[in-house]
Length: 216
Image (cartoon, rainbow, N blue to C red; front, side, top):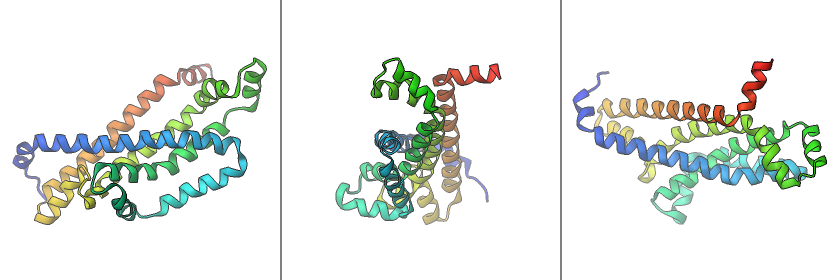
């Protein structure tokens, strides 16, 4: 299976546009997923009777085929980028919600009790103690959700979106492998770059973990 390098050089601009649109859709979905999952995770962590329901609901949503989700959203948001982002956001919830709950659960009880003894209110304890200490686990979920979203964007090709997924459709329809190969490579590169960026961000945001390793 050979690659037509002249086709790639002739379509550099289009490939860049598709890659940026692909990445934008995935990152928007992850950010929205975080915005939804963080408050739900706090509720699930603090109101134990709701924990099973919220985690179970996210698992049920995750089992719905991605194409079916996009089709179900069409009457609501139509053939737009909004449909893609909403569908992807739903899929990120199962990872983000579970990891955030697990991260909050991992915070030692005595640490929270110490903050309370110092007069910190529950919201301040959450923002300054619990979430920072839970950040490594939360970031692990963000990394998984981001890579997953980048891989799923291509499915939205069936509703007229899909970013780099359009290259797959074009290549299959014309029996021309170059767009398919380029689409796969660019998708992998986006996932690798995004994951590396998140690892760097976590490194910057959690300096205490480095001090713990140095002291071990």
